[in-house]
Length: 278
Image (cartoon, rainbow, N blue to C red; front, side, top):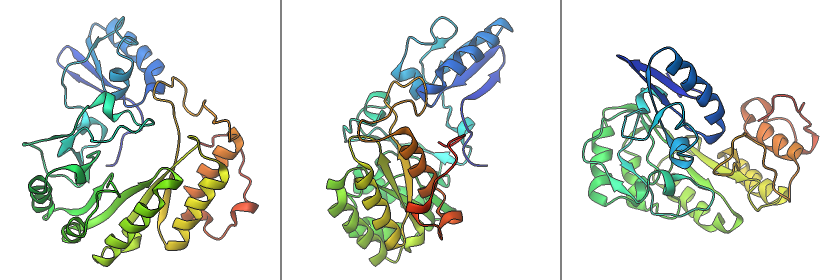
């Protein structure tokens, strides 16, 4: 079924649940919560956005508490661990989930959403691989290139893998990214099954971004451009790094995230219409 775009909302008895993944969806969530409350529902709100801005919805909803909203965002998704060992300044996970915790009880599903599975113990990692073996088309949302070992790659290659993702956030990450790609391919994982998140508009320059993106494309790795969003942003794509323009950010995102259709077009010749570009 894939990921739900936007807010997840469902009803259980006289309670309405609203799960908000991104802070820029909070204004919309406020309106939905107010409407649901006016219909007589007890409204509960949660999700990463509510964790980041806990006071935003308190007038119209009960906020916080533990509710498993993931199946309502993507019924094919699961977590085997929560949190992360990193403290990346651009990432909300340290604030919304905290330190790395391995989950003892989790349901094997094809989309594995762990923030840093490779930081887990070998015992946990092995249990994850073993439980995922019967599943077709396993999709890993993220592998930490700095932690990837030959052992990890060999075990990942045992799966019916759809795709796995690493990240190249800054220019200084290049040695570890190149090493990780080599580890994966030597284990027999085709480059077509490896994707790479590329963060742009966060202290870099267009030239830095172009180098990372073109390097990946030349290697046969599809990049997934991610425009930087401040952690507490209430409007998506409003922030523009001083080294960039809004037009260039949109141009990079549109071109590099559409390589299936634009693979024959040179970047220097590409000038998209600005309307509707993310």
